[in-house]
Amino acid sequence: MKQIFTPVGKVIGFINQSIAAFGISAGVALAFYNVVARYMFDTSLTWASELTIYLFLWSVFFGAAYCFKEDAHISISILLDALSPRVAKGFMLLSHGITFVYLLAVSFYGYKYLQLVIELEETSVDLEIPMWIPYSVIPIAFAFAAYRVGEKILYIFRTPAEKVKIVSEAEMILAEMEASAPEDVLDAVKKRSIGGVL
Image 1 (cartoon, rainbow, N blue to C red):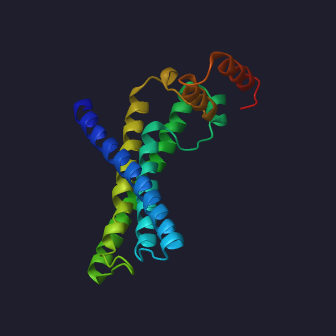
Image 2: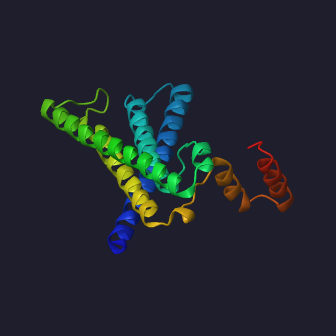
Image 3: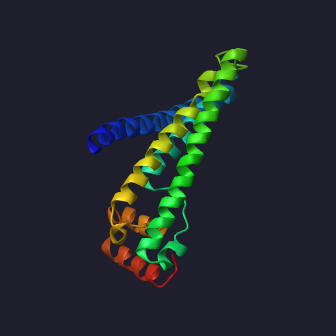
């Protein structure tokens, strides 16, 4: 099973990261060009605004899908911290299961809506492209996110309750700081987080 999940996960991760990075970079560059052209040369690309919105939307949706892999979405773990490992594992499986069903439902109904848009031959105002192209981000990105949550469910299910790691936001921040912050700053932050500031 792992031999199947690993290569598929890598491909999905590459797609998520690539589209998110390209979307935000191209969107910013296009918006910057259009502003400069408008205020310095009294001209602009009429379709730039619409394309910028689509690029940002694709970047956000695929970036959010990638965040499921990194456990980077906001979560409240106070209740889980207070429970026994076995009960906490059960609650984690339940919450991930609900999330998985929700993501699959959005992906499925997004696909159904996509079929309707194709049938109606709806096109965008400025770019004059078929609207199924920008709308396809919903079924694809949510399906990728569901896949990531499915991976997490399998991981939690197979891992003994005592070894299931619940990472808080403070711990994630500290982990990021370890790579770049000086030791004295890191020690001070750890002391404050233990005291309940973070």
